[in-house]
Amino acid sequence: MDYPLRYQSKNLAKIAFIQFLLIFVTLYFFRPFTVNVSEQKMNYLTICCLHALLPAFIVYLYINTLTRFRKKHPINDWTLKKEFFHTAIVFLIIGLSGFLLRSVIYTNPDNISWRYLWEEIRNAYLAGIVFCFYLIFSKFYFSPTIDESPNYHPLAVSLEPVKQDLAAPSIFIKAHVRIDDFYFKADDLLFAKADGNYVMIYILEDGFLKSELKRISLKQLEIQLVAYPYLLRCHRAYLLNVKRVVKLSGNSQGYLISFDRTEDKVPVSRAYLNVFDQVYQQANVAC
Image (tube, rainbow, N blue to C red; front, top):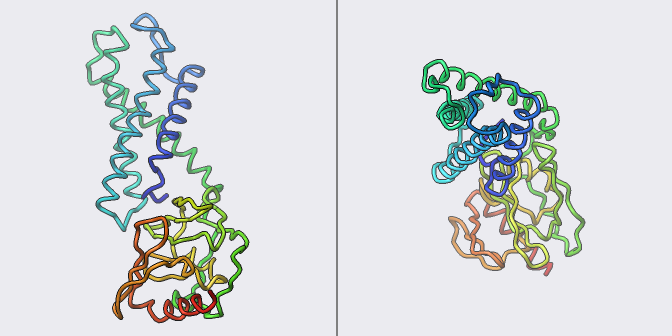
């Protein structure tokens, strides 16, 4: 379960909110842990809200900070071991925060003791591990569905004439996980940028530029676009739509490509120059 950017800012708040609801419902309706009503400083509903809100806030803050760090310092060898390591840290922080929260919720004079410190950390790990097992056993829904061809070569691009069909049908792309499967019109794509096992897709749709992060490698995306020679791999980390190129600069060592509606530039590396030149010339002739 690769980490990199699956917790984007636009989704992280939703994840934290759902986490809050799950914890609140579990605590309020099932009461999985012993509750001493006589020691409570407030009603049980408020206590459940606090116990659910704190972990959700911690997860949001920790993962948001980690994501920002990874954007500045990319980690190319992210492993399952590292994933579990950060998960364990989150559980520990939640346990410590639950321990400190006791003084706010309960009147017990032994709140600050090794016994309750151990109980809160233990409970955080027990509840967290149960939730993780639930996700792992649900993995069948998110299992990889793409096979890479061992004989496929990134430069083995068909050089058939580029078609002028501007009403190209929507392309269905099968991602690593089903929830990331998506459609787009071939001519709407500007470019795609790789980020580990993820790809950021930039699409110009109805005059508006939008970007979406998808769990799929650039090579796997390229394989599924082989029928569209103008959607061309141009760099180890980029794939572009030759039809959408508005400006080309550079020399025999490489190009820099510009598009409409964005300041982003896409490089064409030396290894892809010959193929790019042929497809680009055909596109210009077709136009």
